Amino acid sequence: MTNDPQALLEQAAEALKNEQYAAAEELQRRGCQLLRQQGAEEPRIANEIEKLADIHCAQRKFDLCANEYADVVRMREKFLPENDFSILRVLYRSAKSYFESQQYDLAESEMRKVLSIGETHTDARETLAFCLYQLGFLLYYVGKYQDAEPFLLRALPICDANLGAQHHQTIQLLGGLALLYKNCTDLGKDPEPYFRRAIDVSKSGKELEGTYLMNLCRLADYVAERKRYEEADELYSQLVTVVDASGHGVMILTCTGLLAVALNISSLGAKVNWWPTLLPKRRVTVFTVI
Image (cartoon, rainbow, N blue to C red):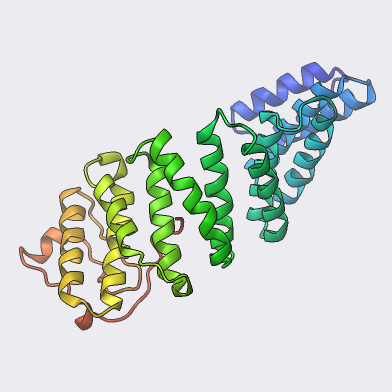
């Protein structure tokens, strides 16, 4: 193997391009070691270590990449403004690495740093909304519902104003708030308006069909839980109609199993009554993110 770091890093990039992750990892690691040994400038070392961390992330080696991202941050803080986007980006990736390795306290700590940087960029409102949403989602995911709410609520009007009502991030926020209020009754908020708004703004876009079905299913589930069976049946019927019309051969629902899983809905006949009280209870995991 050559001792020319530039040649090694170029070979690593080529291996990565061809999705040869093990080879890319070894070449990139050796290139980074040689850069350090040869006294390369710190900005270049930081850039190459970030690439190594990205390779480890692609391999799901989250403990390794989290440590490497932390190294990059420490280096960049020496020669860049503390709110530089290249620091924000790496902190975010570090937070996601901790999240994926189920180190949620560390993930939260990093995401709070990300948000503190995002709040300094008053000319990048979309970045701020993204940071707010990511921290809110993390807190929701670990069950800190009351902590999550203010971040999601702050993000929503920013997304509305800067991205538009039909942007996927705006719709994600609506769905996230709906789930938050559905799962945390202590907050005393009604999730239904958020579900319905998410459904309304996503029902006309083909690219948003999955999001539309997800929120329609969750709303039907919520309504059924409140014993509003006729309304729930109507929502489930809408769900069946959309899935059938989409040409999907398999119906892959439901949130609490009140809707049966069926193959080729059209083969079931023109009239299908999906009464929640008559269907067996079962649980099928379909949608896993908010």
